[in-house]
Length: 115
Length: 112
Image 1: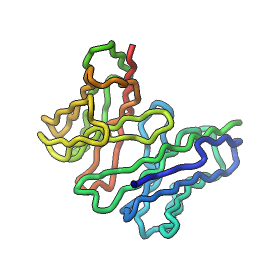
Image 2: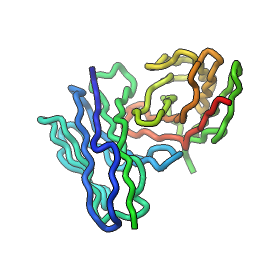
Image 3: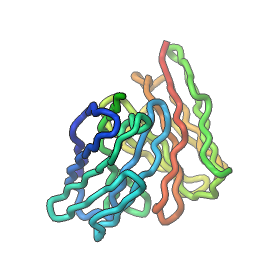
Image 4: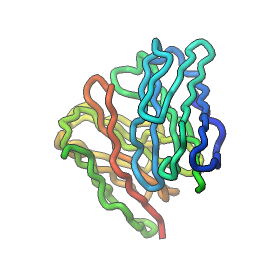
C-alpha cells in the first residue's frame, strides 16, 4: 500500500532556531514530491515541488531534500519565525496514476515557533 | 486575482440534513477535487472531476455527491447518509498536466 509518513508529529522550537521535518514514503515509482504549509483553518500552500530526479529545492528559508534511494525527504527551515507556526504536509504523486493527479498525503507535522 | 473560492467557511448541519459546499475557480483549470481533512490524518479524496459533466469517486465517496455542470464550479453535497461529517473540507484544482495544484481556503462542517 502506498504510504507517506511524517515525523515528528509535532515540534516546538524557539524563534530563530533551525529545524528539520522528515517524510518517508513507500510510493514507487513516483513522479514528484511536494511540501505544503498549512495554517490552521486555511488551505495548504505549496512550498516546494521536486521530481524524482531532483535532490534539493529551495524556497527562501525553506529547503527540501530528496533521496529517492532511501525514499526519504526532509524540509529544513532556517532561522525560524513566528509565522512559520503551521502544519507542514508532505505529498507524493505516484507515476502512472491513471490520468488524474492522485496525490498521497502525509498526516503532517505541526510546528510551533515560540518567542 | 485568480483562485479558488470555497463557501461557506463555517457550516452547521442538523441530523438528517443535506448540506452543500460551494467551490468556484477562475483559473481555467480542467480538474477539480474535494478532500476531507480530519485531525491527525492526511487529506483523503472524496470525489474528483477531470472534465465538465464527468466525475469519479475517490477513496471516501460514501455519503457524498457532486456535480460538474460548469468548468468553474464543483459543489459537494454532504448527505444525511454520511454518518460522521464533521471535518474540514478542501477543494482543489489542477491544470491538465497536474503540475500545479491550488487549494481553496476550506470549509468547516459541524454536526449539531
